[in-house]
Image 1 (cartoon, rainbow, N blue to C red):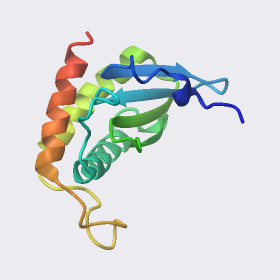
Image 2 (spheres, rainbow, N blue to C red):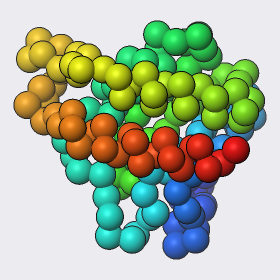
Image 3 (tube, rainbow, N blue to C red):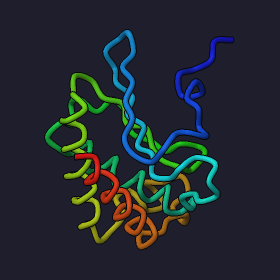
Length: 143
């Protein structure tokens, strides 16, 4: 079988940050790397789930909602994937800074009621906000 692009990256040298790759259909996959791979520090399952709810909601309600194809967590718990259409790296960097800031201002987790979420008990807003603050610092250092 053909190896998918994310498995072709050397995860021993991959750093935190924002990495992008555009496919033949014009969809850009942004690797939002919150944690250095294989370093022993991972996002907790509850925080990962909560960040997914926070950022997915903010991104899909934002200025570029029509350009967001997908947002979701990495199984390795080191970050998230954001798939976009027709947005530059600079536009996504700005969008992420704004979206993380907006997510940090939320006092409730969107879609976290039993009838809205398949695992509604597995959330941690405070830990999610701690991770988001750390990642915002990473994003701010990219400019």
